[in-house]
Image 1 (tube, helix red, strand yellow):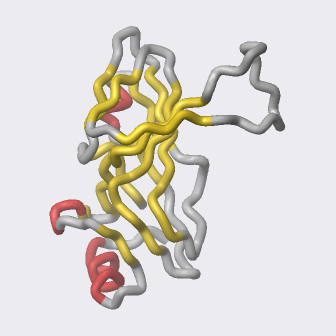
Image 2 (tube, rainbow, N blue to C red):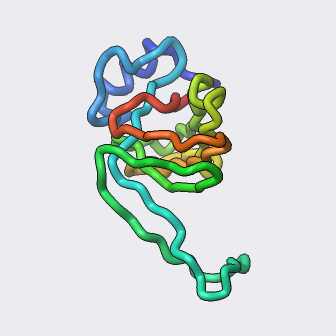
Length: 144
């Protein structure tokens, strides 16, 4: 079942669902708009140039208001919003179609688990031939 805006607002008022910071206009008829945070991580290069599944992966993390994602580059980012989901609610992230048409694919690693607390990690991939400037605070998707 997908929650309506009325249910989302009620749960936030009752504090059974926490989303911070949150502007009223982020609440849509059946979702909440999510914005890009200012933390970006890229996989560190390996000496062999190959990543083997099961290897421990190192990341270089930066904090910035803008990040230039190059063509073919994969970047991890976080949402600006902090979430606390109740134990009986799961959610998923949908990227904005306008960004997908630009060649920027946004997803997370599946469902946001019941009881999750924290910022949501976003997996970003630039499939365009041009670099794309990412700006913290920009709407990038919906939490459904």
